[in-house]
Length: 505
Image (tube, rainbow, N blue to C red; front, top):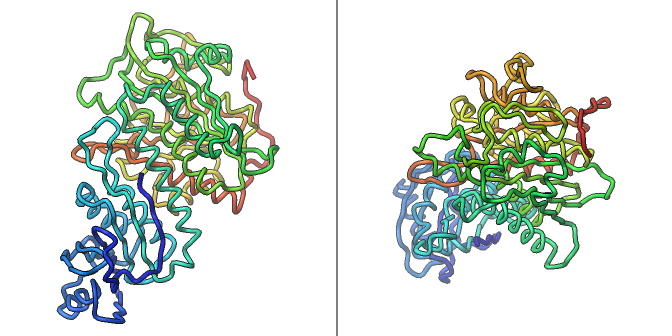
């Protein structure tokens, strides 16, 4: 586990060995104040005199210094010091040394803003992470990180949030990266229970609580859409209910619903074999909810938060739901399953109905839902869907603050017209065009009781290629949103909302 510390100690002039490597971040217009010609500062002064130090983003000068805080040094340009530039530059360098360095120091050559400090912490956490759970041969990765900045005392609050975010992202990445046989619905439930126990300091009760519902309890709730996805698997489903009480018991919570398909074959509508292994990442939404709660245990804001995770595999078998089958959701609305590979919306719709019982301030669901959103936005931004302008603005603001970007997509009613069915209240898919939007319009049918937004993270949740692995997004966005609501809560609805057709409570 990676640990961080914040200090104003002048590592550049120190001659006491403490770390294995140092990254010195150089912003445009930096000025090295060398009090004595010793350690790393002495070499940097010579390099600056020879104009060998460059501040362009990603430009670096690497060298070795004996009798210094660390022998290995990288002077790294961060340009104007924008958060995105810091993340890009630092992540790349740290990733290159992660298998060789366990103790690392980050030094800002100038005072830093809260955003810059957070960006550096997130970049080190991302670049220094090495997956180990099922790979005994893997190196440890970066374990200990010290961040030295001249104005450290003014950044304590920002640093605490940055640490919490890094911990949450790491937790989400870890569980999303695990293979399907090491991250079953049962194991996700156990992970949630262990998280709550740790958050409560090992005590039976505390600010955090969790309930893991088994298949019988899920069936008793009438979650027919959720169970229709689970039917084809030998692994029984779980419905995970996490709660954090940081405010008064009667204060309405913010609810986050994470899609937890721990492996998605597509069911009877079988996916192509190429890259199907990446469908272990189809529980990225669930992982982000777990990551949010891991982050919350570090900062414990004065708000109430609920996390809902419907967890299941989507497998083909003689028991699996077939295209054309009609299932009854918890809301009482019937759904014709036209494509069993559009399964995420089937498990989410029942969780969204369940969310009504909390009388929430707002509900946000997070899901690796459609390939269509990847075509639209790539991996840079998640898709944001809502008709609530206030909620959209707050989520967009949190995304920009956290450098965990999203983009608001249209939600015109016309996009949902093709969800009609001759044999049920709706089909689970529409036509081939604008699939990300029609998926959101499907979910919207189950959210009339509260302000709601949907984040499609199919492009943002993991990377493919040489650096294949989960990103832990959008944990930074979600935590920032919660903290913003603590500071300045928003009423997302100005008038009573419509009642749903929920059959069961």
